[in-house]
Each structure stands twice: as C-alpha cells, then as structure tokens.
Image (tube, rainbow, N blue to C red; front, side):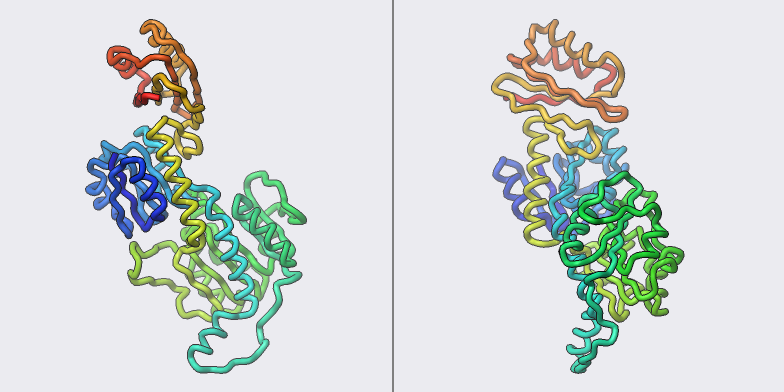
Length: 399
C-alpha cells in the first residue's frame, strides 16, 4: 500500500509502515483541499495532524483511500460522517499527549503568576526590572477547568499537587478527582476562578464559546489559558480585556487561523501584549508525546489493513476480533438493517464454510462484522456477499 504522511508525523510511524512493506511518502507541511485531492491519487493510508482538512470533496475523490490516521487528539479536521459514508475508518490518539499538554499548562500558570513573559523580554532588552509588582504564588489560588475530559482530569490532579484549589465545569457527567469540585454553570466557574483553563473539543457547538461576555464575568486580575481549540475563543475580545487590565495575563497555544507550514508568517491580535504567552500549537508537541502518538496511530492503521480490526475508530463500528489462528478472514461493512448477519451466515453455510469466529458491532447507520472461516472463501461466495444490497465494502485476509 502507498502511505502519505503530512505535517511532520514522527519518524517512528514512518518506520512502522516501511517495516511492514508499505511505500511511504512524507511531507512536512499541510495541504489545501485541492492539493490533498491531487496527492491522494493511489494512496491507501493518509496520516495527518491538526492542520490538514479531510473534507467530503476530498473523500469523494480519494477512490483508493482505505483509512485515515489523525496523529493528534482531535478529529474535527476530518468530516467524520462523510468518511463513515465512504467506509473509511478514522483513528486518532486520544490519550498519548495528555501529559505533555498538562505540563505546558502548569508551566504557563506559574510563568503568568510571576509575570515572566515581560520580565524575560525586558532582560533581553537590557533592562533590569527587579520588582515583585504583580507577581504572585499560585498556591491557594483557584483553578477553573472548562472541559473535564482526559486532559482536564489530569490537569486537576497535578494542579492540586502544587497547592491549587480546583473547580470544573463540563456539560457531560464527570467524576471529580481528588478534592476538585464540580460547578453547575460556566458563569459560576468564571466568578470563582483565579485561573481559567479551556480543555474542550472541536465540536461545532463549541465555536465562539468564549467571547466578551465570558471574559467580563471572570475575576479582575485573573488569567486565561487556551490549549484546546482556536475557534473556541474570540481573540479580539481577549485582547481588549488584557489591555483594559481586567485580565492580568493569558497563554494561548491554538488560534482560529494558523499558518500552514513551519516558518510561515503568524498574525494575531494578541501579539505584542504584556504577560501574554503565545505558542505555535505545541501543547502536545514533546518528543515523548509525538513518538507515542506516532507509534499508537500507526499501530491502529496497520491493525486495520492487516486484520480488519477497528478498535478505537472514531467513526466506524469498533470491532476488536481476536487474532485468527490460520484459515481465512472477511471483514464486511454494511448498512445497519435487520437480517444482515443472517444473510451473511446463510451464504457461508451454503458455500460449505465453517465459521470459527465472528465479531460484530454497530454504530448508527453502519454495522461491521469480522468472520473467520476454516477455509478460504471462493470468489463466487465473496461476490455473492458483495452483491448484498446492504454492502458498503468487503475485505479479506489469509490468516
């Protein structure tokens, strides 16, 4: 298979694919929609990070595409329903860079509390500004976490360990860790918190979550951190609240519009502000995290192409069939209607095939079944399965 990896995917993934005999093309930057369509000719596996958009138009044109790997946490850069409709599973790394993001946020909290961004800039400018004005300890302050998922909960644990009180708000029902307190509304969290840190996902409903109204509700002198999604925050409103002195600082790692490639110009209304940390979407970009992500997502893609396993796919039914010990395996993706499994098994029975293992799962309008048989299925039997009205695709493996 041909594999296309974009946006500096870690070399461990490149080696994983090449060691399994695949032809790998590596590119450092992201691609536009048109560029991606051209690049995907003949490509079976696509690996991206957060900047490349896999749209309905891309998926419709990519006739050879078998699966997509997002070498990051988020998957909002992929049209997941369209990928599912085309039978293309999408995999990501939901846990691999959690610690890296948490450590960046903790470091930013401490730096903002001590006003280190402006201190270090003045030193570089040759100005000795030895003053405690505006500098505070974080111990005893209240951290408000908006979004209490994998990153939010680990941030909660680490923050408590260094003496912060933690409150959180999440629209989902989440179990509080340690002494953290769940609050009933975002407004209550903003009113109580000395530090507000966003850790929400990229679903469309979160667009514009934080604007002038929310910043106005924050405590005077508090700080704001966003290491989640750029489209969640109105950066112009944040700028106004920094300049007015209502907020004492901010740390922003993600932006509504980000450069395509390394070294491209960066523009933001937050540039040039005192006590504001701007980082180029590097929350999960440590060597440890990127290596783990590269290994994890590559393994998921290889598991699918080698044995049909879809465990942790974000858009297709998850089937984690046990390894088959000899024989033949068929993976059958189909529309989720009554009687499909009976049709499959009747077809196999009429062909004289003995089923040695079968795993099935459904997700929305799709179902997926992996069937192991003791003998290889004939081309005639496989064609009968392909001709079933409910078929999306059928793939086979010798085990």
